[in-house]
Image 1 (cartoon, rainbow, N blue to C red):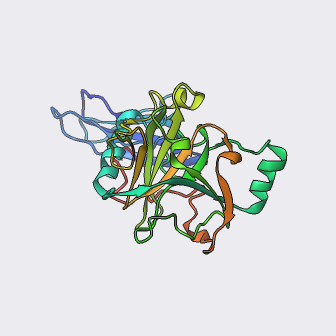
Image 2 (tube, rainbow, N blue to C red):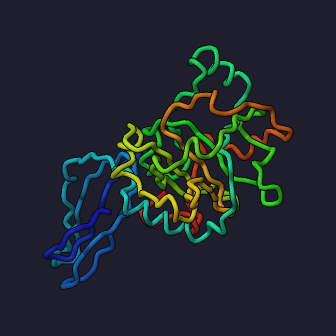
Length: 296
């Protein structure tokens, strides 16, 4: 947020701003002193700004003396901080809903994707850089590498849904292969795409991995056994049980390569619902449920 300072005479401050090469002008209303003249502008994250300032001082004859434009200042705003992400986290917790059991993580893709993994990548699904879907200020967009998974189940069957926007081939893996007591869990984002559905991005990072190092200090860490989105609890016999939130769609990013040998690939019976794809999806900036005051 930019703040104008105090002035010794009654003034208007004209601020010429260029946001991503689109020139605009902001005008701060003149206020009779001794009141403090302050201008407040909320800036979007991850945005390049060019700012120049011009002032208009009221003279005794009622006219205004206009100054020259100041030197141009160029800067770029940063990603959401952990403070901002914790604000999103609190908002997401409000609507997460009750917890349902799960037993597998799954990833849908087309047949060519899995053929490529087998033939050219040593049977491995390799990490890819996260796209720009979700909040504009998310610190993981365009930076964090991982393999995308889903984990939501259908209420009536307890199994993954048969429809998917990403392809007819589905890789399924037992939940404890990706999420266990040696995994750290992080909150990554909360957003919607002009629909009633809300998405929560979670990051699974094996402890001590490069992905874990990236997330530390950037993302809020979640308690594996006690959070509102995805839990892993150890029973008395040593087995692990897993639950996911019912009322949000979870997008899970696993930060390491995944061997196809630890799971199975099969064709789903449902439809490929392309309208539900979140690839590079833009967040609805008007949604009061999933936006915070600092911007998108």
